[in-house]
Amino acid sequence: DAMVIQNPRYQVTQFGKPVTLSCSQTLNHNVMYWYQQKSSQAPKLLFHYYDKDFNNEADTPDNFQSRRPNTSFCFLDIRSPGLGDAAMYLCATSKTGRGRTNEKLFFGSGTQLSVL
Amino acid sequence: KQEVTQIPAALSVPEGENLVLNCSFTDSAIYNLQWFRQDPGKGLTSLLLIQSSQREQTSGRLNASLDKSSGRSTLYIAASQPGDSATYLCAVRRETSGSRLTFGEGTQLTVNP
Image (cartoon, rainbow over all chains, first blue to last red; front, side):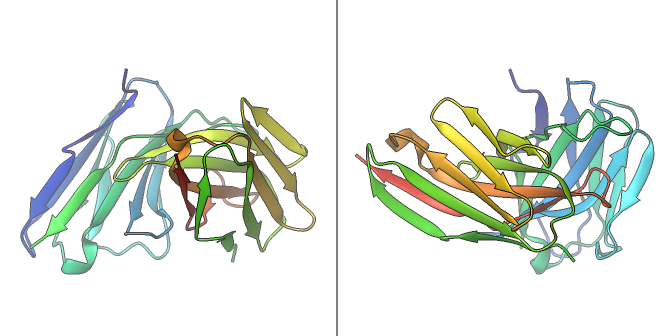
C-alpha cells in the first residue's frame, strides 16, 4: 500500500500557467519535503515543513511556493512555470524528533512535470 | 558546502557478480548516510541507513560501510540479479542541516542476464 502518494503522476502545463502538485501521506510523519530532480541529476531540496514550520532553501526560486494545510497533505505551487522547471518533483516524509538522527525518508513515486 | 560524489556514474555487470558502488562526501560532519534505490521514472526507496557512529549496515545481499573520517561509503551488492538494475543514490544528513539531505547524482547499475 502506498504510504506517500503524489498526484498526478504526470502533469503537463503551459509556460507561465500556474500549476499545483499534491502529496499526501498515511504515515503520520511530522516532516514533509519537496525535492526537484532533473534528468540524471541529484534530487535538490526545495523546502520542507517541520511540523507546521516552513523551511525554505536559500536557492529556491520565489516562483516555488508550498502549503501544508494539515499533517497529511502538502502542496507545491509553481506560480509561473518556465521551461527550466520541467523535472520530476518528489515528495518525501520522515518522522523526526529533536535529537533524533536515525530517521529514514519515505518517498512518493513523483510527479513528472512537462512545460510546453 | 557539502558535496557528494558517486563513482562510477554507470556500471554494467553480468548476473551473479559481486559489485561495489562508491560514494564520497567533502564534509565529514554528518549525522548519517543513506543509500537509496531509484527505478526509472519512480521515487526513491531507502535501502540502508548508517549512523555516523556506525561502520556498516547489512540487509540481505546488501552491505553498506561508512568511513566518516575519510568521507567515504561503499555499497556492496552480492550475487547481483537483473532485478537489481536501477540507479543507486547516496545521501548524507549534515549535522548543521536539521532534517535536510544532500544527494549524490547516483550510479546507474545494469545487471545483464
